[in-house]
Length: 222
Image (tube, rainbow, N blue to C red):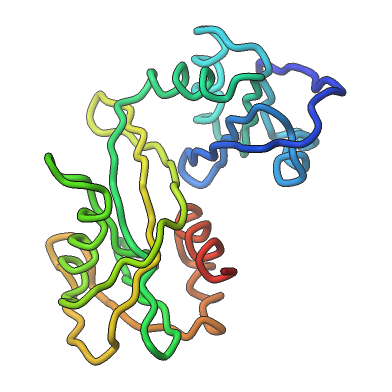
């Protein structure tokens, strides 16, 4: 395993990018903050602080190993690190929504055995905001959805044939009236849709994807 020791001057991070390899987080960062710091002390975490083609390839390889559960890739220039790392993937952009109704209930969908939030890939010529609203309406049957604000961007990886995909999902807070019919989009493997009270969301988070949990936590703490 390729490991580098942490150096004392890495103190407080202003920004980081979290990428999920299945359920395992990889942090791209310019410094270590209180969120990332606990990960670097685990024996099953990989830490790299030198940027070159070999170390990028090494980190991607390590994140796919069963015995590795987290990664931290640190470089003083986060923009340079992001550009170099993203080159190793085919980037796919998507958008979706955290929809809340007038009773402060959150809209959840059940897809492929997990509780999820409505989202989908960006179509040619479409803005991210247009994509987010369209996907929410298509996947849930809602007709009157109002986009209110940007929320969070999440990243996760997956394989599609011979391609290694990095999906960049842009999430927005939205509002909708609960007095509308909910129609699951079956062709997207959605089998159930429901409104859930904010204070009853925890059991659903426990049976969800890590990136969706991040969206819920970002939106429900505001």
